[in-house]
Length: 135
Ligand SMILES: [Zn+2]
Image (cartoon, rainbow, N blue to C red; front, side):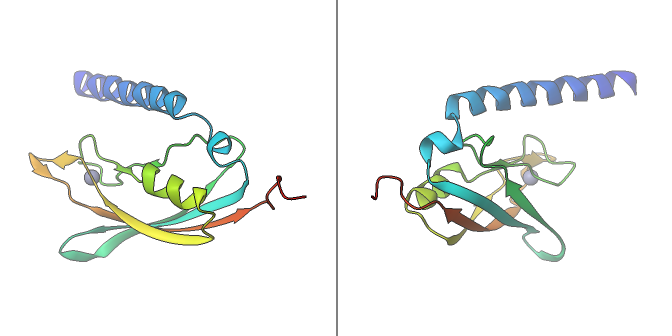
């Protein structure tokens, strides 16, 4: 349907515009964590009551260009406004120079009037440059 597709496109554009605003507000990752050298996130998305159909992927963060914003999309196509926000946890772990840390978030979206409640678990691996203020 033309109108449904069009509505979907508009919604997607609005979401992307909002995301762009949040990214600009969050600032660059290297401004917050100047010593960060590399970061990758191993992401596993699960549904409660269904251990099959897990979604799993690795997200390598391009540290030089990344914003200080860690929002992951919900991979469930019927999920409305879905997504996970691990920004605060990840930033505080990076500020503590953790080499490996993990956590989980619940999807904040809804599908068919109910909470999506998918769970995203992440395992982060990070490396850091030697502190520049040590001489
Ligand atoms: Zn969802």
